[in-house]
Image (cartoon, rainbow, N blue to C red; front, side):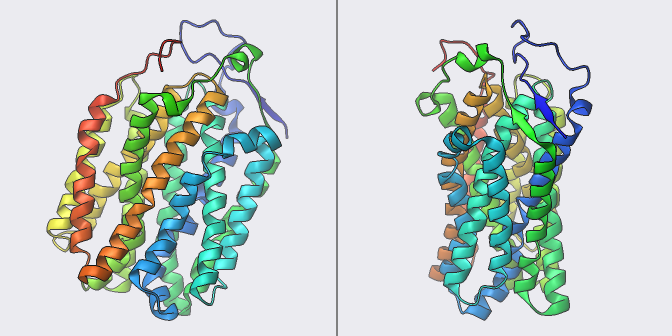
Amino acid sequence: MTNTYRAAATEPEQTQLSPPAPSPLSKSAPLLAAIILVALSLRPGIASLGPSLPYIIEDLNLSHTVASFVGAIPPLLMGLLAFPTPWLSRRFSLDRVLLLALLVCGLSVAARGWASDWLELVLATIGVGAGIAVAQALLGGVIKTAFPDNTSLVMGVYATTLSLGAAVSALTTQAVITQTGHWSLAIGVWSVLSLVAAVAWVSTRTRVSEPAAHQSASPRRPSGAMRAWQIAIHFAITGILFYALMAWLAPLYRELGLSPSRSASTVAVFSATFMVGNQLAGWLSRTRDRRPWLFLSSFVASIGTLALALAPLSAPFAIVSLCGVGLGGSFTLGMTLVLDNTRTTEEANQWNGFVLGVGYSLAALGPVIFGYSHDVVGNYHTALWCGAAISLFAIPLAFVLAPPQLDASET
């Protein structure tokens, strides 16, 4: 099936260069389905680690610091590889690069299930992180081009599906470990989703193109734009907290006395409520000014992280739900801000690569802070307070991200 799409003008006052589609979502249904399947495959390779980590630490005799690097590798690579990914897509075509990324991710997830020592575990995790990094760095530009009139809505669906994959894998992984007694099978089985996503992407035969007038415009360099840096820092704060909690929530609650199944359930609840936050932000943020929703998301996340530091056992599922909803809203809005501030697919890919590059590179610090802190002080108390402090920085930053003025004078 061939699905060719063109970007419509992003501003109401611009003259459209091609007739608008009567029903963009229905017309691009095969592409939307492929995006959903790709998104569904991009988080199990990360989320399945949290419930498995206590077993991996014990089985492979790892310190918490070494284990933290396993959790930090995916976001670090998601940051570093976001920079060259736009070039790769131009050089080798978006379709081929995305397909290769999905295959690398799937094979690496399977290989990690066979890891017998820390080195094999790390090498396989590098492949997982690389595949995820390249795939998600490309999808922002695809969404902007294919769904110019529904960018916020489709980005919300995309982010929600990411969280759905994380929630299901987190909960199911512990069940598989309980039934089989093998963490390797529980984390390796998720390779199937990446392979299914690869087949779905090939079946769309997607070609990304834009009108020549838009392509000829010189894209603004994100590294020279203050707005791009502001979005990247906001995204980094969300990422630091998200990846720290994904990696260490289950070990934290295991250490505090919860059963393995209830500890794993905290990760599932966190992922599920993160998904709720994704969808709420996508539906509620319909105006150009996203600052009220950015503030609300950041405030809710801060309340959750403060409660986690003060009294993690008082109401575990309510606390992680606050963290999930707040960070989920922040994630969707952060991704949407990139598309708000760009004109073309090329520019969107460059800004998306920059924001993901800076944001995810800093996000890799989250798991490391938690793991290293535990080895130093013997518990997670210091790390939880560090997370609470970091979350507070997002609140004033939300007010800075005013509606963009997409004109040639912006730098």
